[in-house]
Length: 299
Image (cartoon, rainbow, N blue to C red; front, top):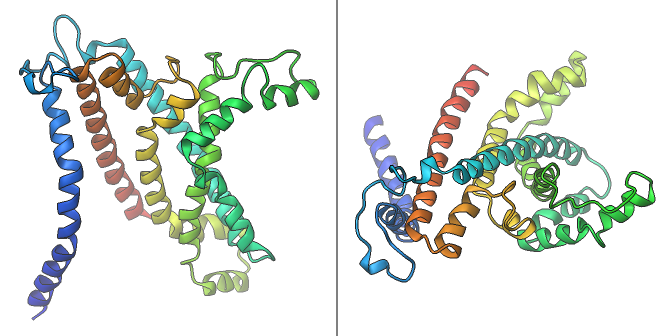
């Protein structure tokens, strides 16, 4: 009886998932297949139908290939650096914002709406806005810092190799922290009130309550927020492409692939870069899911 009910539930679940899987196959699986296919050819953007199979030459060959390209590994390093620091700061700040917004105070709904404004602004618009703010000639950042005496002359924030990546990370943290806060806040609101009441009766300090009770309960919500945000950060394109175009210190894997696909007319090479990006995403995602499952099991 139990086995039959389980089978019926499984069939119903797959029936509900089937339309989504079909749509996903049409809009994602076929383009992914074509991208991987072109990465093993000598395809050019205007001669896709005449592409010839050349094996793994776009990935590795005596003449070069993606895996021997310093520009590619530079893009990989930039992407991983950006992902690590942006996701770290967004998670910490998102947790703080979520804890503040979870408290009951007058105007809480208004503050929740205001906090979401940076996330609601399209990335291209926010990138252009911050590009003007950090402009070395007439940007607001230089003007304010010179007025308070920190700078003596205008500084090229988005050109200097030592500051361009921190600027990119800062802008992304400003924009995406509300997203992390929203997901963590949803987890906070699932915690029953009696847990706080029991902790208050037992005299447990707020510090201990947070680290021993609240944080372990929030772990699944934080885990989901981290995987969503990390995947998005690893695919970063629009912010870098608009804010710091043609800067080798910030070129990400997606920007590198786009340059080769369209700007440099190396469609097959760009397809190889896109396929490698997909492979790296899959490997990191599976590794993260395995590690997070092990950590959550211990908690």
